[in-house]
Length: 178
Ligand code: IMP
Ligand code: MG
Image (cartoon, rainbow, N blue to C red; front, side, top):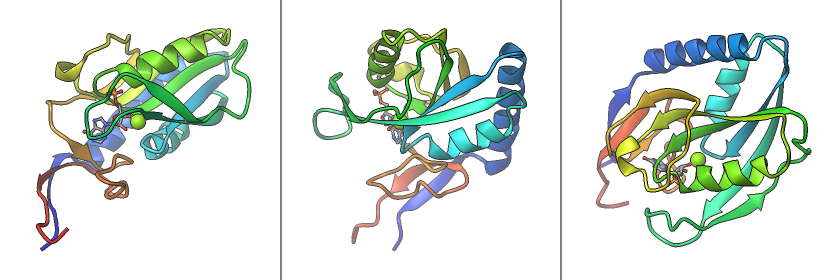
C-alpha cells in the first residue's frame, strides 16, 4: 500500500496564483532588477515558476538552511548549510520561500540578509500557516494561507519524498510498510 495523499491545492490553482504573484512583483519592482533568493530545497519549484512569470530583469541565488533539533518542531535555532554565492549589498532582494510555519527560519534569514546592506529586502512565500506562528515575520507576498496541516508537493517534502508532486497535498495515511 502506498501513502494516501489528498489534494489541497490543485496544479491549476497554483499556476494561476504564481502568475498573479509574478505580475504583482513585476509591477512593484518596475524599472529595477529583482534578486530572488531561493531557499533550498523546498522553494526550488516555486522559485523557477515564479521567475518565469516575472517580466522585469531577474537574478537568482540559492541558500540552504536547516533548523537545529529533531522531529517536526522547529527549535528556533537555524544553521547555514549553504550560503549565497554573491553579495546582496545594494540589490533589491526578494526571499522566495515554500512555506512559513513557526516563522523562525524566516526571522533568522531576514535578519541575516538585512545585515548585509541590501537596497531592499522583501519576502514572498507560496504557503503560510498563520496558526503556527511563534516568531512574527512580515510577509510581503503570499500565495495561499492554509490550515495547520502537514503538506507535501510542489517542492515540499515528507522525509525527502513527494517534492515532485505537481499539486499541494496532505498526507492522510502513511504506508505501514514504509
Ligand atoms: P519554520 O521555521 O517553522 O517557519 O519552518 C519553515 C520550514 O519548515 C519550511 O521551509 C519547510 O522546510 C518546513 N515545513 C514547515 N511546514 C511544513 C509542511 O507542512 N510540509 C513540509 N515542510 C514544512
Ligand atoms: Mg523551506
